[in-house]
Length: 496
Image: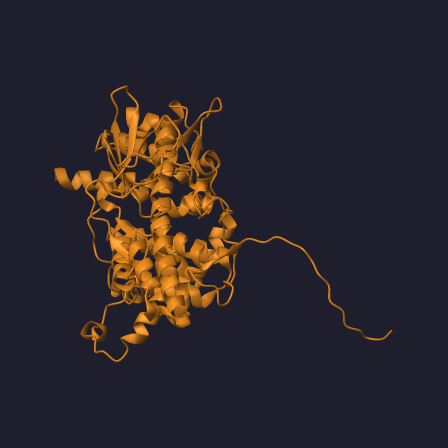
């Protein structure tokens, strides 16, 4: 059979991410401080973008109040689908598409900052010569992008890195993270194992033992005897060396050797990198009680950048004889398109945050009325389905966004907790409310007769909570509460 060539036409559909859509997604996940910084940079670069100086703030479309106000027991003030940017179908499988070449006003933001940088390349910028100490977060993020191109692993890995504290520890359970992201626990565990291979050695550990074990494994010194030593290292923390030696069945010399090896390790590997700057939390949303007993959800107008696109200036420049050159016309069209897109994206961002926050308040109404014991189990899919957005969009909205309520200021992610089943019936309890209850039980215990984890399981079972002992231990450790043996020992020291 001879080889031949032919052309076939196929019709298909695929979701693409244009530069404008990428920009809108980027704006959605920025904090209010990062957003302000970004808008300021665009004000400097774009001649048609201006600060809106009107006293009442920017107009936000028909049906929206000047403060972006809505009620928790009603529909959101605006439907994001009415704007150009559609967040409802954005997911991590979307592919990037290039804009048609030579299209005037296409709004490709990828070259905006670059064109300005090129024009200023010959100017000396003293701030560019300053060195900035790299944070642990930045260091891990760089390694993540060099280690994998799998989009799912990149997303989960980035979330795990966000959860790692300054000491280098991951303080949340993998199962809780999996529920929040709507991913398989095995997939999250795979991403965590990848992060744990990064520098500094020991990063991403959930316990001290795991941190030391990772460092020893990197050094090739994780022997069976050392692994046994790590299992009983709590005796070293209480300076109970005889008990440690008996548990490991070591000689005095072996015990000394293992202790010296441990002292060469770093119990908090993350501290060798610069810390992220501590910033005052400015809430993005305010929740107050309305006159009729419901909840009023408002955007914090102080955090919303107020910008407009100056169409008159654009029309004036476009009509002048100086714009006869095609390059000049293309530049003006591009800048005007960018200005209009930024204004729309900021408006879309505000509406989406308001809509997600409103739905969270509706779902967690009992928490605001009665307290943390009534916090309901919640995942991203529940909110996403209720407001017809994609789960990844809800995840971006709730990251680093804060809500001020009568019960305090919380990150929006605080309201997403896994479920703990009830012993009888179909009821469920949120993990956060169970942690709160464990802390309350321990706070009210007899110091000389502290509650063991087994006893806590029994007490919670009496309250219709079906929870395993290991889960109680994990929650107790996450709260920074010592074991019953250590609490009794501390009580005796205080009395003695």
